[in-house]
Length: 169
Image 1 (cartoon, rainbow, N blue to C red):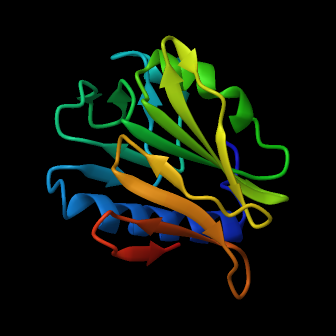
Image 2 (cartoon, one colour):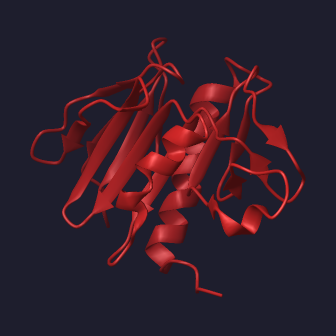
């Protein structure tokens, strides 16, 4: 078994889940938000082909099946926080195959957000927000705008809704 990611990764993942959950669930009370959950393309022997996104949001109407131990099918929105040596950058193909509609990579060195949106069977060119270019990234699936902003210990992700409410991770 591999060890979990470092403490900053874990803390940030929890903060990001809470910020996104707060921004999404009030508008969509039946949405389900996870910090780490098993996602596979199979009902049985799922552990032969699975990924564990750092944050996964399943919106009402999602066709994934909750098998208890794992989801057969993907979330609507998934987040991968990249750590040194992380192979998550190779995961978009898998996530496309299980129906993920938007995929956010949080790169920590140097810090930036990369939002990938589905484009047919693959992914469109990522939209990027960094400290040097803190543009807002609109997640259409969640109806939330994200951007990277400076923070006291590390950069933070600002999640905002159209009504002007803002949450920080």
